[in-house]
Figure 1 (cartoon, one colour):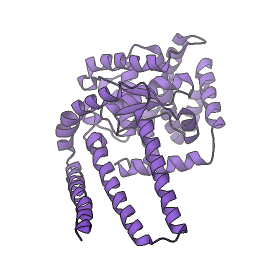
Figure 2 (cartoon, one colour):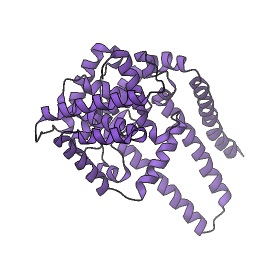
Figure 3 (tube, one colour):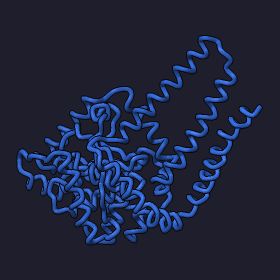
Figure 4 (cartoon, one colour):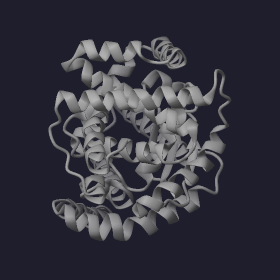
Length: 363
């Protein structure tokens, strides 16, 4: 009898604590101005710097190891459950125990995810910081943006020369500090310390699953897929650093990454940003004015066309039936975190960039 009471306490006490925290977090998330002030500009910056400082000590990705352990643990649980079922042991106590563990794990992950980073999805965000208002944009604005990006794209590619030598990933991780340092002179809220960027341990797998990088909220690390064509990596690094600064949505991270890369004074970072953003803008333009979009493609410098072909060949070489499924579920994750367009949220940066251009008169 005493043992049963003890077992109940071991479950209900942590369950009550975690559930209470989860409810408080959820209620707090409905007040974006409070989240912006008390969390994103209050608790999160020093907490995230401390977390990155700790994980940055290690040259490998602790987050990737954590994910691996979690996956192996889940597999072990499933195997044990299957063995119990095969041996026809009493299922009720096993199921009850497994269910309690699962509930505690889910609540614990939810609480830590939001405390460590997730509440940034509920902040006022980069539009508030920049003082811009994203509105429905016209075809003429989209055309102007795509052609401005086209001009910068050709210009920076010519500056790189015919066969540019890109630095190592670790060098780029250092250079991102310089990039954010320069951007912070114009926008102080982009000040960045302790980046804790790591090359993903699963880069080749990432090519098949369709990701260039990802932020690990549990370790504070930014993982970058360094097995992709080199000219893609600098913008990815800036994008993931934006997540580390607390810009949760993909469109926000794209805009912050773009601003940082283009103001860096580093031609490789600039070209990488223009390369990515032109692709977004011209793709949007193609949907409303395919003739102008096709003309933009024709006006690309030969070197840029070669790079686009290189990237296109890379993507084709890694096409597989699993990637669309992964994209689908990642899209659902984005939708659950206040990004209703799901995977298309990345494309929203076009509207954000037009709003930025309208206010500051440049891209």
